[in-house]
Length: 99
Image 1: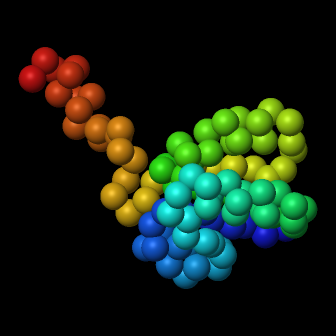
Image 2 (image 1 turned 90 degrees about the vertical axis):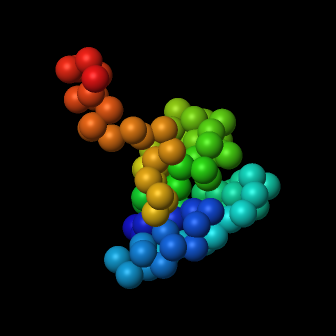
C-alpha cells in the first residue's frame, strides 16, 4: 500500500515528498476529479491525503468514497497556511474569559 497527496499547493507536495509520500498538484475541481478517479483505479493507494481546498472541491466524491469503500483512507490536511477556518486556541481562551 502507498500513500498519496492531492494538493493545490506546491509547497505541500514538496514537504510530503520529503517524508516519502508521492503527490500531485491539481489547480481546479475538474483536474482534482480526474486525478482522484485515476487513484481509485489503482487499488494500491491505501492513504489519500487531500489539502483543505482539494477536499472542498471533491466534497461529494469524498463522501461517497467514505460511505462505499474500505480504502483508501482519506485524510484532510492543511496547506502551509493552515486550515482557513481554524482560529487557534487563543480564540477559545479569549472567549472563555470574556475578552
